[in-house]
Image 1: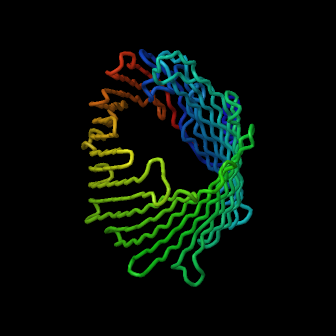
Image 2: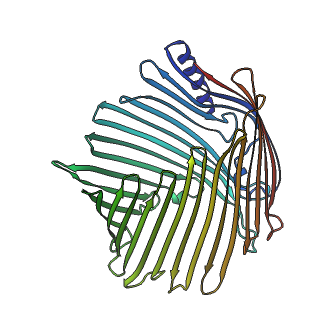
Image 3: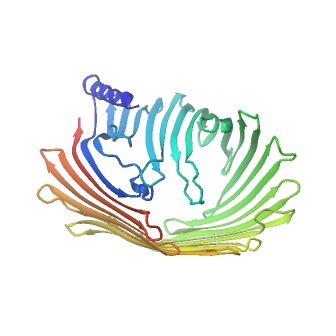
Length: 516
């Protein structure tokens, strides 16, 4: 991929500059990343994908040809193992092509002897032969290999588990759209090949159709719906799983800013080993009313049925959501959701269950650079048969401000509490999260900045994490910048002696913002 992207980018850039008139620009970055680590490599997620070495990037590049053709490229760290990139070529209402690549690593043990690497390649294209018709398609390749150490101490020396699989997928479709009316058909197929566990090899495909239709002469009535068929088959045994889903929705745009919506979904799933299929049926109705620029409120009800002939589960739920803006600077929002599942016939492994969710928020926005927001959320899940209860809530505060002529600051704090219990045990935690970013205005061609993310978890967890960032940008010789960034990572799990981590990461980059 590296051998493909670099020559392709250079060739297209050269062609842009000498073959066609146009305009564009972007940022070229060349630098070096120094990485110093100590401790358990597997406990600090933000540093999994950090590598030391020379890095070269082409960021936010855009070029517009006079004939309407647009080329874009965003290639990050193309000389390192954590590279990622996108290349696109498009002409409005004619065609478009996009290529992407992303590489990611995850570490599972103290010394980084066991890790997995994921390579993802993607390609998509579309063509519009007629102003109402679009043909599209694409493909993806995901390749993963490596080994995973055992995460829990079982008292036995178990070997690491090896991963080595590849998944390829392709899709093609057709969309016809005219005056808010739309019909789309899409076909997808995928192959999964597992060299570590060949018995997991499988192939699958999906056919999906969608349609949207305002009723002729009654444009205030809008109908939509679709159908999907999914099937997967294991290569070694021929075992198949299939699913058919149909859905539909009707919306009535009534006078005085009222909107009434009804939707349904019917799904039937089965496999070769099932004597009967499982049906899932959902009905939902919503009524909304809005006041222009002042507020809106939505009330909804949902009913579902899960039936596999011997066992039947029904569920019902209610939903209320609304927002209110008494002025252009102040906004309030509230969401409440309640659901209750009940076993009507037969049995279900988890039995009856209730779930409640609440969210409240308030935001004051003085201008584009100054705002203050407060948010509260609470969720509760109860199950009498299992004698379990999960109770979680959080409160968050976020502030953004421009400090006169000195710079800009954003900071926030979130407090969270969780309580989980069952018939045998109980688990509790309290989390504190503090974050902040500070950017000072340029002074004598130098722009400093700093940031912090501090996380602390207590009670049944005893974890602390600190991330510090310091940056300095020097603007020299027109559009050239020299950037120095120093990141400090520190993680400690005080319940385990070997779960600690410290890292110092220094980046020195030279950037050039160019345009033509």
